[in-house]
Length: 132
Image 1 (cartoon, helix red, strand yellow):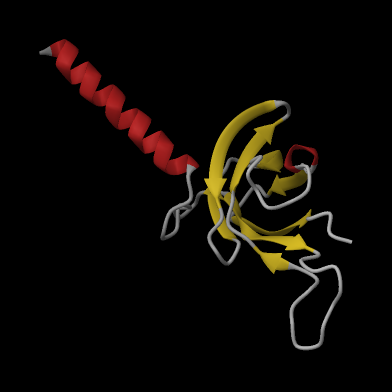
Image 2: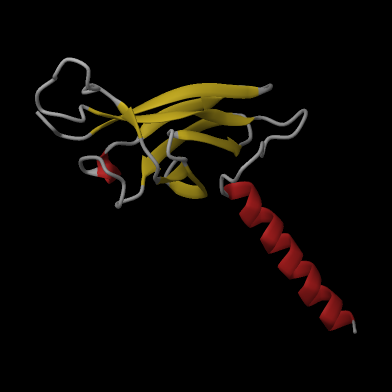
């Protein structure tokens, strides 16, 4: 029985940690917690701008990795409007798009962010598509 309870507890811990690392509907940052919230944009999205059509930047959905130094510590996904939210302890982080992100050389586009000591830090992250 003790082994069974330990196994169940282990599954619950892993499930709760997985939920904290991935963005889902609703706020993942609870009262008194710190984290990062914002939008990801990619651009330019067209080689030539035309009146009435967006061409500079556009939001996008993708998976992103959060690094502290060189160690990956979390993953999140932006929605179709480029919005994301992730609970993180205060400190400096690097955000890197997954290789499938619709941007040029995703691994080389690390964005540095700093999560404040209190509350939610708002950011807009811009990534280059390589379109010229």
